[in-house]
Amino acid sequence: DTEVTQTPKHLVMGMTNKKSLKCEQHMGHRAMYWYKQKAKKPPELMFVYSYEKLSINESVPSRFSPECPNSSLLNLHLHALQPEDSALYLCASSSNRGGGGETQYFGPGTRLLVL
Amino acid sequence: AQSVAQPEDQVNVAEGNPLTVKCTYSVSGNPYLFWYVQYPNRGLQFLLKYITGDNLVKGSYGFEAEFNKSQTSFHLKKPSALVSDSALYFCAVREDYGQNFVFGPGTRLSVLP
Image 1 (cartoon, rainbow over the protein chains, first blue to last red):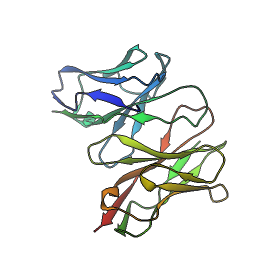
Image 2: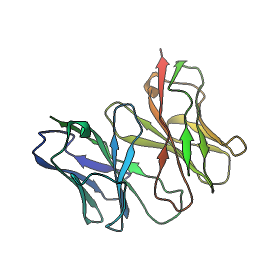
Image 3: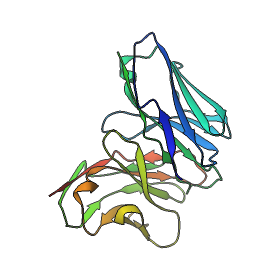
Image 4: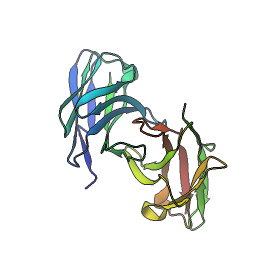
């Protein structure tokens, strides 16, 4: 099973709200990723967790706060977002056994609208 | 630094005809190349990848891709296009032991009935 699940599917929030996106995988993968994707553009990497530790933060504003509570779960906490943060947020995972040939498996995404 | 180019924003093909979606790459080390497809309002679905070995890679849904080291290309092909193949296609590259994919800008494929 190569499934990554994400909740919620859609989220509308005001600029003063606090919300969280959730991602889950049960493939035994030890690397998990958050991407942001604008319409008709490629995904942009935000964060990478490797063995539940944050290994890459691509200079993402602090209003985005990732969390990896265990090897199967990845959260993205949102606070005081701006309208330009509206996008599709994608979670992905990979085995993290090393080497460049690992496949990343993507979830269906959360469509976020910031008003 | 690694980079990926997809020279065509849009590819139109008639149903039943062969399709090609082009990808060229630039890496300093060994390339690991991937193709993903994205349907509207969905995540990316893995189609196929090249790691090593045969230059012709076969993947899901009848797609295949040919790795050409001298031309630094990894074009996606299908012998007979279906209307349901209409989607956004992304080529991606990763270098040895890197965690980051670098995605191309994407190519929108439209298969016309």
